[in-house]
Length: 77
Length: 201
Image 1 (cartoon, rainbow over the protein chains, first blue to last red):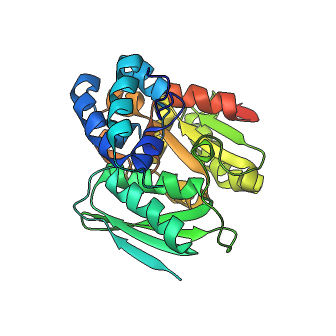
Image 2 (image 1 turned 135 degrees about the horizontal axis):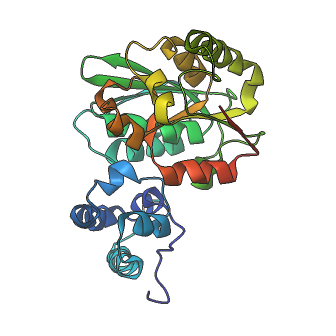
């Protein structure tokens, strides 16, 4: 994970998307691999638990989210 | 001021985000969110409950009207995601029901006893935090169940009802569930860990 990433594994999917709206597309990208709509089934779960439950690579997920969040113009709240 | 959000046509997380933004912007005591899919209904309900709203859901055809009333009657700052895990400050009693009858011996008596048990649960007041239905217990949550009115009453008082998804699937009852949030073993174990007391029936 990049040292200055704004994404933390303890953040829930809702935390991430509400602060960085463009990250929704990242979660959508992972839906197929997870086999579910992550935003439907795991919106309130922390990322580490989402990765564990759905067999995702947590580090890669954090990297992908961090990259989009860092390049987003500004967090919403 | 009561506010209404029309979130028809929006998939998750859209309705929850709109609800969150409305709470941050307007601090309403009452909010009505209209959604048209099950996932949004459940997630908006769960979010509002985490923000100390008492939630009821009215169904109108394919639509769900999720109505939240602030329990304190006061506008309060938004709580973080930790509130979604633990809920408001109070003793947390989790009751896990793994059967549709209480005890062994006479099934008819056991059924009556369980109905009475569920009706009496409300005496726990706000300490009753979660009611988890597993194995045969999931049959209490389906269309036609005698327990349904009691469970709806409990849900309206803020009790979080979780229903085992694996069990519903096993009994082919997933489509017949009328109340509660479909859950999994991780949620159940996490609930046990967070609860102050777990009662198994």
